[in-house]
Length: 333
Image 1 (cartoon, rainbow, N blue to C red):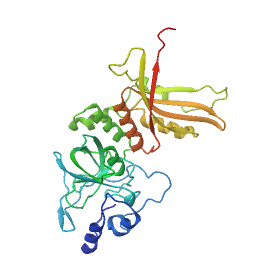
Image 2 (cartoon, rainbow, N blue to C red):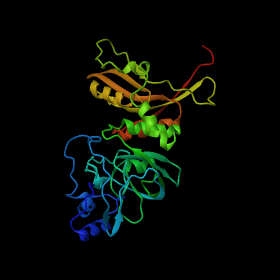
Image 3 (cartoon, helix red, strand yellow):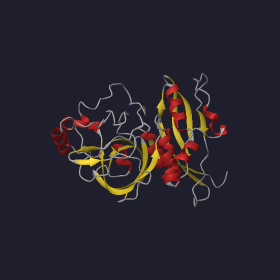
């Protein structure tokens, strides 16, 4: 990470020849100058911070005998091979000063502006995702993009290591996004919003839901003193049933973010998603006090639920899971 050019071209070329971003391990981190002492490691506890870098294009440079010219490329649309990188670079600083987290939807590109958004489509299976470009690379062969481990999972090629993809530049990404704008971008992708209109659409939706939709999440959670009676709040819209559903039945999906003993942590998780997805905040009484459960939903389609799951995991909630809920009304009361 923090892909600074080494003073020794020979050592740099050796490191690049030995390292492949789609493999992991401590040995790679020692051999590859991009993952070594030239790239600071985040020493704090918990998830690395979001954003915090700088807008960066950079000057032309050369790696292992190959020249690269970073520049604004609003019409960038190319097909080629993608790889992925993970453990050896995890929690290290990127080329524009952010911290790399392999569980988030990010990627490295050799010439596009940083940070920016790109739509990546796996041409082998049709899967697509919007990623945040915040690093330089790859510098191996003819690969055109290096995706984070999570991005490779979203495109379903992590186990293969490489895949043929299409990369479409969308535009500049917010400098200090906490992950919510990236989620909104992927929601626009799911809606079928054209690439050139995605950022404007995400800007309109992010944090600007009608007051009636977010009223349920404005107050801080409080502990119950009464006997255990679950309290449930739903923020944002109510999902519509899927077309073609059998009369008398309702199938919906939820993505469970987690259960929290700390009400403030639960509220932060709830508020992060409230402008993008319907959010349920459930307060339960446990043996040691109140427990707060946060989940996204109800969501009408499995495709939307899968997108919500990707959003949750890319926001750092790695244990998030999808739940199918089916309720069948009795024909007679």
